[in-house]
Amino acid sequence: MPRRSRMYISGLPYHLVQRGNNREACFFEPEDYQFYIFLLEEVLPKYGVHLHKNKGHPNIEIYLPSD
Image 1 (cartoon, helix red, strand yellow):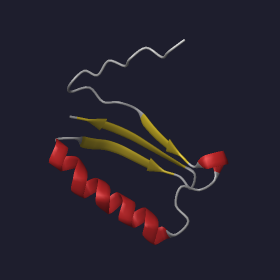
Image 2 (cartoon, rainbow, N blue to C red; image 1 turned 180 degrees about the horizontal axis):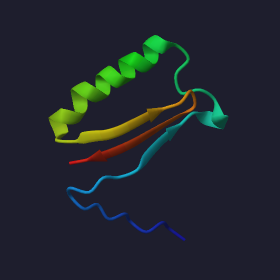
Image 3 (tube, one colour; image 1 turned 120 degrees about the vertical axis):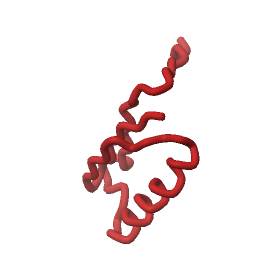
Image 4 (cartoon, rainbow, N blue to C red; image 1 turned 135 degrees about the horizontal axis):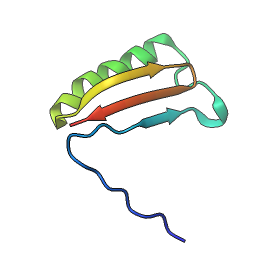
């Protein structure tokens, strides 16, 4: 049975999670994580997305973006 398509409503935040495979770390070097945050800060404003919260852990990233 296919998954129902998700409904996106402009202006509302969405809970996004990025996890490492098998609970491994997403980033192995601090420089990798800093570069990832730099890319987010550069790209998100170009698409009108605001990052309300970023909770970083070694094996999980949690975001609350909205437009």
